[in-house]
Length: 409
Image (cartoon, rainbow, N blue to C red; front, side, top):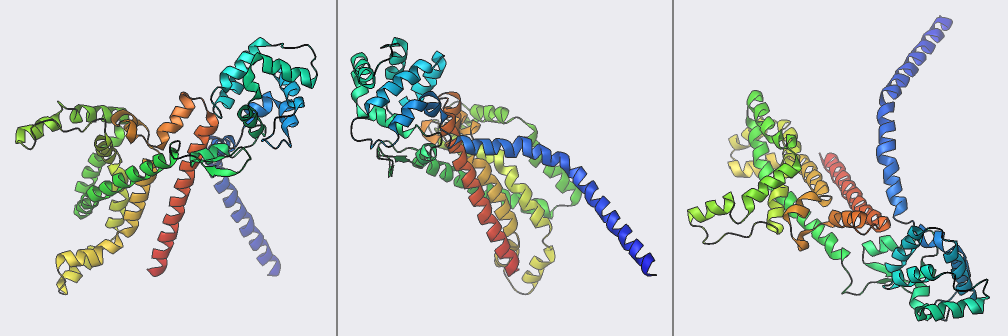
């Protein structure tokens, strides 16, 4: 009996292991897909946000010569000789251009200074440090100005917090300390605040419009509800660009909406609905409304309708019963729909870019700007990291709120 029981236990364990192996085998393709196409690019983005290879790769000797320099006194003569060596070692003009562009982002004028010096090489044959200094100053007197050397010293390390600091309107000073940028140069705090404000407004209107529609759908029969859900999902089958183009037709001065308002006599002149924040909000609410309706509908279908009828039968007013009995049970759907719409909003790019003005662009617009126009991958990745951090914070808050509701329930 003991041997038989032992064999049975071993068979059960082997069967359990086979089930686990099959389960892992079934999920392995998905895990590999997530690793290759999600986690690896995400990790690359975060690394690039703190990577600063341009100056470190192009001017390694200069960085070593400036190591320990106090950044207030004139740079040592060995730094001039090292700079000439490093510039002479650059084989392609494109590499010098990358260096010049990176330094020019720190201090204006660096591009012409670096490229002019690079094209004029050699300035001297095997110069001593003193001769290298004289040759550089004779070629361009700006090599005697501290800001250019401070920019080289500050960026001589391969890793830097500068991109992340700039993304929140901070910077490193000449001595390496962190300080706020001047008020006339600060931009990203306002852009981030604008992104959150517009996302909050869109989320509010999406929930305001989606809640009664989801409630109505939850009261229909299954057949009618399925038909109406197809209409709710219909926008998903249409390209975002097509929907935006339709809104341009509707919102322009001679569009259908303005014509309708003027026909009703509500206004004597066309309302400014296009290329401003109003048009952006309207279009984003329309595009993101299904993201609010679906979570609300799924939660509302699980709420027994008898609760509301019982409250009314016990003497409660219908409106009071709705707010005291029904609404609290739909909070998970409100939270899930609101979070889904808000997180999608803060990363929106196409709709504000096509329907908004210069003051209506969100943070993702500047990510694209730094990627495609400025070709500053570090800054683009830093702004992307800010969006990622905001998303993770919101998701963490949602999880805490959901857990608190479950514990109270």
